[in-house]
Image 1 (cartoon, rainbow, N blue to C red):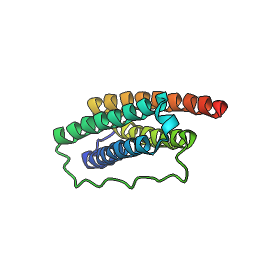
Image 2 (cartoon, one colour; image 1 turned 90 degrees about the vertical axis):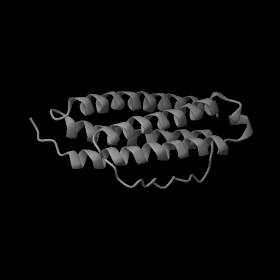
Image 3 (cartoon, rainbow, N blue to C red; image 1 turned 90 degrees about the horizontal axis):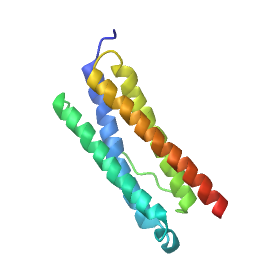
Length: 148
């Protein structure tokens, strides 16, 4: 069994919290930047749902940090700007964001395997959930590319 380093876990959870909060900003901004035609499609609802889900994930991670007394100063990561806010570009940037989330949760999962079953289970669940979002985005990208 690995020895758990709570300080490292707190750092990773803090990065995840900041990343999820940045996702709220990113997805909300993408909603604003959609053109009129795209606002009338299902993409707007999808992006709003992603913003809500990022907020929910941030709240879950924040609760975990409170439980393990991981109080760190919050630093929201910079929001990535796009050259062109087409639906395909927004979806591709969103997919990259989801992949980065998977990477963060995988890092937490690897650290917690055999150490903290609660955090291990949480990270595993989040990897699966973010993976589903990534797959959904991949399908949406393909759908929008073929409809152009």
